[in-house]
Image (cartoon, rainbow, N blue to C red; front, side, top):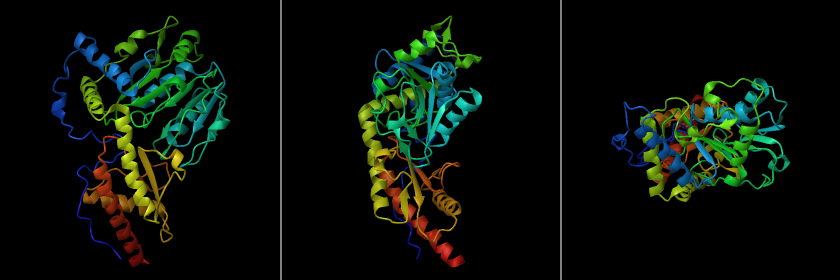
Length: 384
């Protein structure tokens, strides 16, 4: 039997996993001081870019001797810049448990032609991290945006490792504690946990990564936007706001506003707590409804940002069609936008729970999911 529509709606129905929701009370007037129509190489442009780098270091607690650069092409550009510039000096292990990690495997094996050890896991799981040899270079995603899983900690990474760890942290940065002493290359994009704008990536290098860059020249050609060294030395300007290509100063200002908001809620710990509060709302709902389950069965590896769910009711014969119908109902009602599972993932829902999402909105969404589920089950019964 179909149930009545809930009486409360999320104030902000934006639960997309990228670009993600703007922080609460966001207003474009906050960007009024952006130096539009000015060169990013002028003093004012350099100052805003350096402020973005310094703010990133402050909020994330990145060590002083790590370099932070703003690079082209979002997180994808940052990861590929690292792979093309650093891999090939040592044996490589590629770890993949979702579509983006699988993409990095393709780059390493089919594009760079590396004889890499490839370890994969199904959606909702991660590989056995104790089997990973960090004396090799290792490329992995910290948080599987399309699979709802995350690396639980960095204990599997040896402190005296010989290889480099290259970590795509785009759905983890600003929501999960990252062990900087265990990460040599870390990347993320502004459009994820802080709800920034797309097209810009962040590249964070440990001293060990810089040493590799200055001592190793890869055998393949590097396009201009991937070049981090000149004459065997790191191009330091990249890590002081002298970007490789022209950035959007409007997007930079937007990121600075998000960093200010992050400080106002307690920095990384406040952001992390907000994400876990959102996850807790969904966990309570799933526990009370046997027709819904997490894609990640193990709570230890369950993401607190990209929360992936699957329908388990035996009456559902076509999971993809059912999930699509539920998503459409919620979209049509204006209570949840963009929460369908990623196209390469198992069918279901993907609800963004990063810190810019209000817990009250997640709580308000849950009864609507039940309403949409019951409505679709009723439709199936009527057509049977």
